[in-house]
Image (cartoon, rainbow, N blue to C red):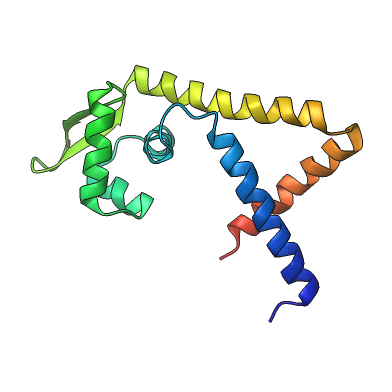
Length: 141
């Protein structure tokens, strides 16, 4: 059972992270679920729609809709699976990679500007150290 101090820190951190996440989302031009799909394809390469659904923990039907929307926008393309003729792979197009990079740039750009405008040098150093701690917490199983 966590201590009351740890519970209070956790509650404050969760609230602050939620507010920051909502604010950064205002910079989005592509819906978050679609950005997540583009990001997975960028990181992991071509995948089946079923594998994408499993990775994102959504129903295959929901992923099929997201894939269809991304294909309509020319951000991903479909090709035959090299070893299983019954399957197809989806992968990023150059336009998809460019859109993903632009999306990431908008998010990072807003946050970087906010850090520069709002935080002192000492606060920036503390935030940098805190990012490593957050990564460690996120990796905990």
